[in-house]
Image 1 (cartoon, one colour):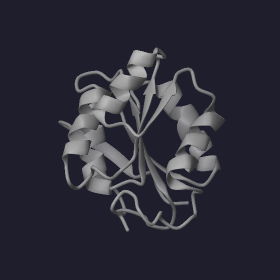
Image 2 (spheres, rainbow, N blue to C red):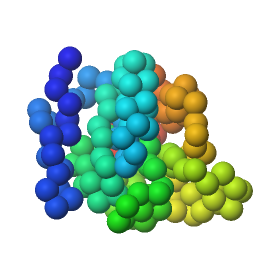
Image 3 (cartoon, helix red, strand yellow):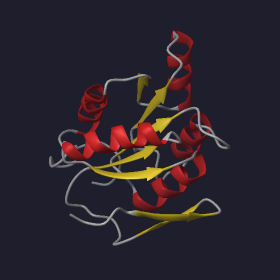
Image 4 (tube, rainbow, N blue to C red):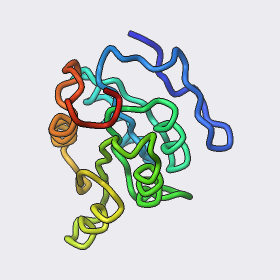
Length: 157
């Protein structure tokens, strides 16, 4: 097993160890709640996905640009740069616009789903969400952890 990729953050700049591993599908989890990070990371790793973690929107945008993950799970209620704005920035950036972003939110109203679509999210999960539902949504967008990249997708080819 390789070391975790997230080494540290200095003023929103995230550093990677060992570069980007292309052996499996990579999910970037942008979540400020440590308990949620532990649960989602554990289940995703159990199913074979590599997981990168960011604790806020600034780290998430930076790490997405640096690591080019296959999918981003984006909490929308982040401190500082929230998940809505982080998603808008990623979708406006040619380097990252093809990466699917799935919103994770405690807001379950229809208007919040519409807000997620307007921000550029490709999926929407309302918290609390069963961890296996998270895996199912990840699979829906990028396939199994060890599957080849989709023919059309996030630009990683």
